[in-house]
Amino acid sequence: MKRSTIDLWVGIFVALGIAAVAFLSLKVANLTPQSASQTYVVYADFDNVGGLKAKAPVKEAGVLVGRVADIRLDPKTYRARVAMNIDKQYQLSDDVSASILTSGLLGEQYIGLQQGGSETNLAAGGTITITSSAMVLEQLIGKFMTGFTGKDASK
Amino acid sequence: MLDLITSPLRRLGHATINAVWRLGFASRFLLAILANSGQSLLRLQLTIREMYFAGVMSLIIIVVSGLFVGMVLGLQGYTTLVKFGSADALGAMVALALLRELGPVLAALLFASRAGSAMTAEIGLMKTTEQLDAMSVMAVDPIARVIAPRFWAGVISMPILAALFNVVGVFGGYLVGVVMIGLDAGTFWSQMQGNVDLHYDVINGIVKSLVFGVAVTLIAVFEGYDATPTAAGVSAATTRTVVTSALAILALDFVLTAFMF
Image 1 (tube, rainbow over the protein chains, first blue to last red):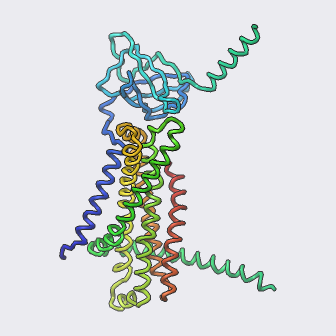
Image 2 (image 1 turned 135 degrees about the vertical axis):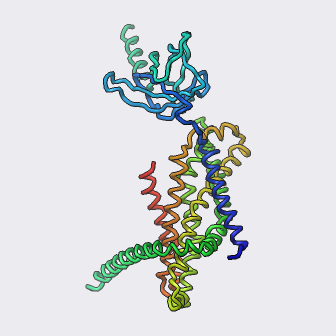
Image 3 (image 1 turned 90 degrees about the vertical axis):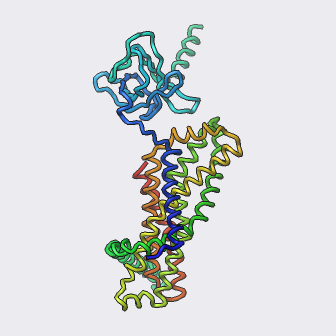
């Protein structure tokens, strides 16, 4: 079997295809080789998670420290229990507070962490107790409307 | 008078029976290709030769179309997104539109019209000039020697072409968004990386293009093999390849999208 120029061209073609898939998975999709061993899980209970989704970023002082792993309803307390994978290099104090924030007007929702003053760190698998829920636009408008009519009646 | 009513009905019935008959034949044909694939994969030279004609020769149209589709996406996306003050999301929009839909679908449509029609015409002409019968007489199975290498060449080439279409399209979006309009390059890429998921978007797109590759190539070789051995028959078969492939791609795309996302 002889080598021919066709083999060369098909070889280039296949190599280009492999390079394209590699580019798509590394540069476009950002394949982060973040395995479970490099993160630890902490939990937080919220009254309302709004539009928070799994894989949403967890940020502290605007820096990405982890991602939301799982959101489920606690069958006992009827609150939303959010599991977060936090990067091992970041430690949280045990009085850290978590709030659900929105990036921009139409942006995605993420969890913002605010460290407390405590010296002890939150252990892996621990629960963040100080939380504030997502802002729900309908509730906000509802409050505004009731406040408005209340003021009107007192006049 | 009665004939005026029954004639269209009769034609409809005939067309239905013919369609079902061809579907059955195509299924048996696919099984025959799979059964005879061992030989064509052993003699890789045949498949590589067909990959050159189906894949390498389609590169130009795929790359140029991909670039322009990406550029148009960048331009259209920018004019729409800027109204909502979220022009930063352009990178994510271009990448998701390409990876999920446009890349696999448009690459498959181009592949069907560039390579699929050529396969049909070639096999149809081989049938017309009785080359396939001559092979059978010489105890060479035409399915193993002619059909199976072309089938596998198409199935392998399609995902590669779709991946290249995506890469060039993303580059086209970058060209318009960052180089021409002047968005921040870092935001463009980081928004893309933040919103594109490897499994959901990249892998599902490749799976889609693989399914399209099987469908388009099977239609192309089947239409060629089933062509009426006349000049008109070959031209009708070539037309049917492009039309059937396009409809099959769009219908399959709907089904696959409903399954995947």
